[in-house]
Image (cartoon, rainbow, N blue to C red; front, side, top):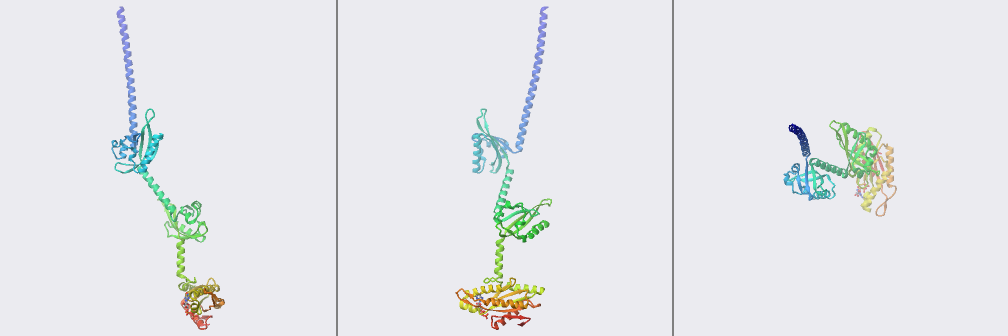
Length: 472
Ligand SMILES: Nc1nc2c(ncn2[C@@H]2O[C@H](COP(=O)(O)OP(=O)(O)OP(=O)(O)O)[C@@H](O)[C@H]2O)c(=O)[nH]1
């Protein structure tokens, strides 16, 4: 009995143990299965992350690479290979700097890689010009960090190049455009400016200082009016208003501006209104050039063309025009108009005795004396040789006679000092005519000429006045 009981106990014990072992094994198996699932999941997740990162980097055109301490590629990813238009395997073993184009740039990159190796400090987003296998330059943004082994010893470099070709070329072209713009505005012989509708100068180029003396900071933000000659301010205001109203570029305007030193300069300006797509005014852009020299030159040429070079009085053409104008005016106003024809007596003898230079000196002094005897509003002209004439607006017959006598007296009053050291008295014969209401300038000139002829034949040094055909 004892044995069967013992066997039964043993068997039970073994059964229990077997169950326990089985249960433990099942538990272990389940745990292992759980762990395995977790590990698989973790692995899957890691692969997913890597894939995602790779896709993102690829989409962002970021190439990853590794190099040894000499800078020779040891690993290159597909993006890098695509970037360089070459198989990844062909890049391995190539020096990192060999893909860089110009020598200066290559040296700069080599220096930076050496710095990373030496200092351990990363090179971050450095614009780098690499050249593809086909020789095409491509701008990349290079980031490089130091690679260390488990003991922290430098074993090489790793980094990434991001393709920034399109953006960087845009930046470069913008920088070039900006440089060009700066060069143009700084060295232009004209002033570029923007002005608002109220007349405030919102921008002036640096050339303002060269042309008008003020540093641009002194001008920007200020009203244009104090810089312009007061008489020309209304012209400029109208120019701005019309440009805005008509929304177009008008023919240029010439006006006077003050230089900082107080002198007057002539400027010629164009204004261009700029509108946005909705037709709203964005700015009014102006360009002003200094035309002072042109204006002065033109004035000089005009003077040469219309004035006698020796004496400075109006030449025949200008004088005749002046007579025509005054005859017209007199016809309208009836205020009276007088004409004097003046001819020096025996002037040939002055030349013959004292020389041509003496004759010139007498002519100059004669004009000065005539001017002293005439009113500023009277116009004196040289008709040729030693023959002069004066047109006198707003005079009566008596007044004309008196002025003519005054001129005759003034001319003869004092002897002329000649260049040869001698002195000589000179007299003048004068024919005078008062304009008739119906006559034109030619008729008036002819009558005065007849009076002069009478004065010469009457013995010279005298005034003869003719009125309505009668010599008085
Ligand atoms: N020095 C000088 N002489 C001039 C100029 N233009 C004309 N003449 C001279 O003026 C002189 C004019 O001489 P004439 O026409 O005979 O007149 P005149 O000697 O004044 O005699 P009357 O008019 O009859 O009193 C000539 O000798 C010209 O050469 C000039 O610009 N300079």
